[in-house]
Each structure stands twice: as structure tokens, then as C-alpha cells.
Amino acid sequence: MNIWAPLRARPGVDEYKVGERVAVEIHSGCGQCKRCRSGMYTSCTNYGQNYGEHDKRHRANGFTTNGGFAQYAVNHVNTLVRVPDDMSDEEAALAVTARYVDVWLHRTRRRASRGRKVVVIGPGPIGLLAVGVAKALGAAPRHSRGHARESLGLGKRLGADHLVNATLCDAVEAVRSLTDGKGVDYVMDCAGTEETVNQAILMCSRGGKICLAAFPHGRVGIDLGHAVMNNIYLYGIRGEGKSAVARAIALMAAKRFDANLDPHPTFGLADVPKAIQ
Ligand SMILES: [Zn+2]
Image 1: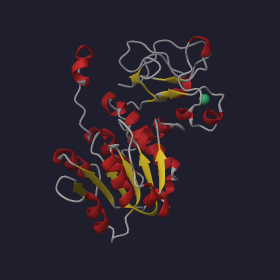
Image 2: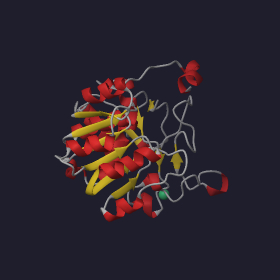
Image 3: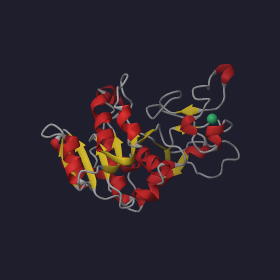
Image 4: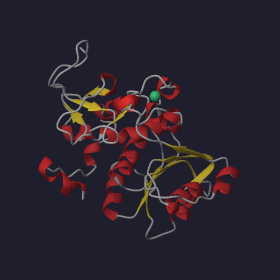
């Protein structure tokens, strides 16, 4: 959960009132390194340097500081985004997931996404929201590749034009046949396995771009030769950067996609261990 209501503000912070709901960007940059000064505070070169003698002020909720399960948390005013009155807590909490997609499209020049072909690999929460955001930003056609039939159905409702069940067919062949053999402009890999990263490379057209949104569990061997020979760009992203949560909230407030379609079972705080399990 990444929705908080300010209980108390430091003197001089008058942007928010006590009791207002806010979504919180996970990262707060040190504000002094060259990455932070260009808006890429998720790439802060002082990442993790926020303890003891090395307090460079970088914060990453849930990683280097307390996250959404803490009863109270301190957040820099720069990381807060006001939640519209007509948006539920449940929906607003998903803005922090949707921002992943937005920051990638932003970094790869979001206007280029209009009318371009996009594949999303992995029908988990980030993958499903990726389909919704791609639709909101005008990409077409959008392909969702995954295994679970239920999740793929959800991908369709969120705006996928084609669904590819990777357990039933060769996903690369399926995408290539849907694109006259040329491949797509963008692939967003939300699975992070050796299989899916290589599929992403082979699904791309020449000059295509791949967003690596998942955290692989170990080393991943890839067909680098194919990527280099075909001018395929690989983008590693971590977190939001450049105020992506604000843009995600704006897209959701404008009903550009329905994050509520994403399944989000809820648990009480006492059941946190069960929820994580
Ligand atoms: Zn920094």
C-alpha cells in the first residue's frame, strides 16, 4: 500500500493538509548527484547512502527505509502526489505500479508510442497495467503474452488486441505472424527470465526497443549478437523517475485505463505475512 495521509508536516511545508490522501513515489533522490539533477532519482549515485555518517538523503521506501507496511513514515514533499477525491484507495495504490510503464514510455519518447506495435510479456500486475497504459498512450496493436488463461483474459479487457498463450504456441512465431514477419516496435518484458528476455529480442523489429521491467533472479544469457546486428535497444528501468507517479495518477483520473480491472485482493494489516506468501 502506498497511500498515506499526512499526519504532520514540517514547518514550511504548506503544499498538503493533514488528512489529505497522497500517493508516494518510492524514491527520493539525494538531489545533488548528476542523475538526480536530471530527474532520474531512481539512478541516484548515492543510492543506499542514507545512514549514519553517509546520509546523502536518498530514500527508497521499502528498500532502504520503511515502506507501506510501516505505521508511520516520513516522506519528502517532492515525492507526494495528491489523490483525486473520486479515486479509491485501492485504485490509487496501483499508480505506483503503473508508473513503471509510464517512465519507460516517457524515456523512449512517449509520443513515438502512438500507433506503434507493443508486446507485453508476463500477465502479472505490472504486465497487465502495461497493457492498459500502452492503450491509454495510443499504441496499436497491443499484444499480451503469458501463460495463465485468466490473466490473459484480463489483458484483453485492459486493451490488448491479441493474446498469445505461450504454453500453447511458439510466442515469437505468433507475434511475427501477427506483424507480417517484421516484429514489433516495443516489447515490455515483465517476467525477467532468460526465455522471455530472448523472446523479447526475437519479437522486436529492427531498431525496436525493449523495456526490462522485471528483476531477474540470476544471470541471464541473451542473444546479444541478434540484438546488436538488428539495432535493438535494451532499457533497464527501476522505479519511477521524472515524476512518473504524477503522470500515472493523471492518466487514471482521466479514466484513460481502468486499473480497477487488475485483481487486487485485500488483507488486513494482521494478515500481511499471509498476503506476501
Ligand atoms: Zn542522487
